[in-house]
Each structure stands twice: as C-alpha cells, then as structure tokens.
Image 1 (tube, one colour):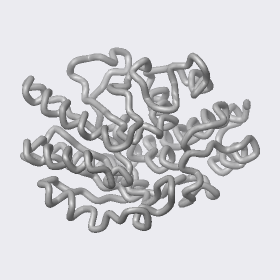
Image 2 (cartoon, one colour):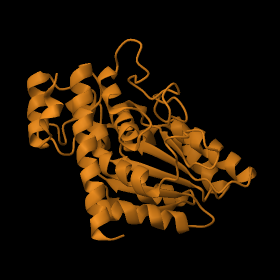
Image 3 (cartoon, one colour):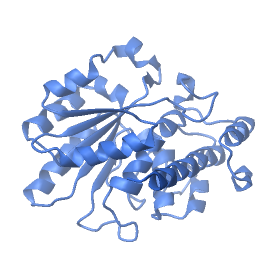
Image 4 (cartoon, rainbow, N blue to C red):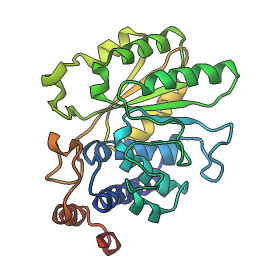
Length: 279
C-alpha cells in the first residue's frame, strides 16, 4: 500500500477518535479507554481489509465482524457512521432512551452481526459463523475483536481450541492488547504471559504488531488472508485511551465518560474541528 493511502487511513482514524469523544460527551456515559486503543486497527479493518457494503448491510457475500469487547460501542458506532451505515448525527443519540445506539452493540443497528457485551462470548459466536460459512462454501471471512482481559475467560479457551481443531483459516481475531482492564493491569489481575505462546499451542498463526502503526495494521490483515490451514490472531500492542493524554494508560477511563470540561480538553488535544464542541 502506498503512503498516500496510509495517510488517508490515519485521517479517518483521527475523525473516528473525535467522534468517540463527541458521542461520549453527549451521552455522559460510556467506555473511552478501549474505544481509543482499538481505533487504528479498527479503521484498517473497515477501510482496507473488510469486504462489506454499507448500503446493503445484509449482503450475503460480506465479511462478518464481531466486537466481542462490546463495551467499545463508541468506536463501533463511529466506524459505522464513517463507513456510511448510519448518519453521523445519530451518534448524538448514543445511550439515549429509544436510540438504537446503546451501550453495547445490538442488531437494531445496521452493520451489527450480533449483540455483544458479556466478555468472553464473542469468539464462540465467531467460531460458529466461520464454521458455518465454510460448510456453505462461502469465501467470506470472520473478524473478531477481543480485549486482552477476555483471555481470562474459560469459554474463550474452548473457542480457541475449537478454531484450531477445525483449522478455521477464514477466522481472524484482533486482540487489543492494551494491558489494562477495569480493575487495573491485566498482569496484576490475572496474568496472561506468555500470551502468544498460549495461542500458538492451540494451533493458531500469530502476528504481533504495534496496534497504532497504521502500516503494520494494514499489512497484518493482508498477511492473515494468506494463512492456510489455521486461524490467525493479530496481537496488537496498544495504549488504552490512545490520543488523550489524561486517559492514556489509566484504568479509571475504562468505563467513565469525560465531563464537559474534560471532553473539551480531549477534543482540543485531538485538534478536532469546532463542530465537535456543540454539547
């Protein structure tokens, strides 16, 4: 991919980060930390790797995306707005009564394949989808976005084992390895190291990247498509709250929306246009 395309993706990631803070400011609740850490590879997925048609969300030939870490709905809805599934102004209804943009993704919103929120369950659904698509001789791929804390869940390892056993090379997990969960550092709560070796032991192909390097994100998705006979996990090293200085690497921003003055400061740090300051 040429540098111009990389710069275009970076610009999209910048708008998505602005939208995340904007939506959270209007809602007064939500999860900024993991949304901001997953933004760069999320953009690489939706605007480079993914085969989809926002004007025809149920197109049979589409790839499927499952956000197992469903609490990052500010990111999910911002990606859907940027892609054209929904109008950007709808982000102002995030978490409002009657809105289809709730605290976790739900299937009322176009582009959402399955409602998610209970951590550790998304990969099981992804494995079932990938297996079903292969049985139907479809060449569609399944992408599952997970938080690293989900690797503490027993059901996750059953799904990992199943995918390896069935050699699901149409399945790609992106692991948002920001190292933090709601209660603190992952390694303090329930250590995962050596993470890559554990996935490798279950017959997965491993790709490790800097999850904020757009070129690496793009290349990782390209490499994953070439892997045959085994599923792929992209372990993306990221920073929770990436882009906002007072949120970065702070566990308290896992599930706390910024107050008005904090949102203004965050938008200023992100150099967002004036239109974002309408709350």
